[in-house]
Length: 220
Image 1: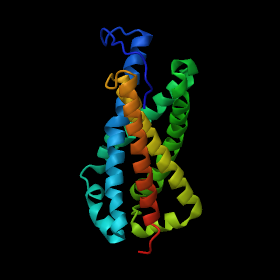
Image 2: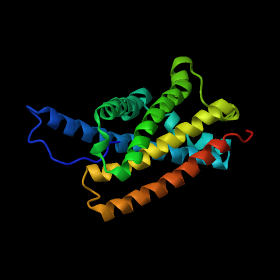
Image 3: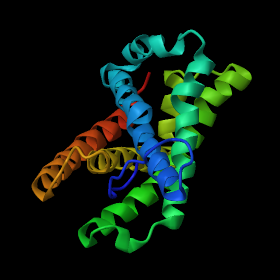
């Protein structure tokens, strides 16, 4: 999710300068973090929250996503390609950005954004390979018992806790920087209010995420 920067649209798509290409790619990077990646994370939280009502309810309510038509194509275009682009260009931003590019009070949030971006990417890779990847490769369905066994393993549980919290911070702080990058939150007062709202959203989603993971530890 892109950090704030001066907004100056390129004159045309053809014959772009390096700065103009960077402008466009950063906005695509910013947009991909919100749509579709952020939207899917909200949906993923929503559907998995049914586990708070028990494993049987969770399995029933997640049936829709397990039976999507053209599932591999949908996942590739909605998730895998946007995530890969967002991660790769995020690394480019990290490698080329200078600390002075951002106000002093935002430096710590910028640093956390970059760290959580790397952690989130590694976690998503682990999560996808150990669930959807195994299903496509060997037909192993990630049912409640499998998730329960995951969460009963201290190492895997810790991985999920760190990964989920990294994803949540990266998204919620990214929403804040998205509003600056796209000129939605203009001025110090608006940016302060949006930042506080995003911090509150992080706290709510973090609590919900931990509760969902721990709910998988209940006996089937």
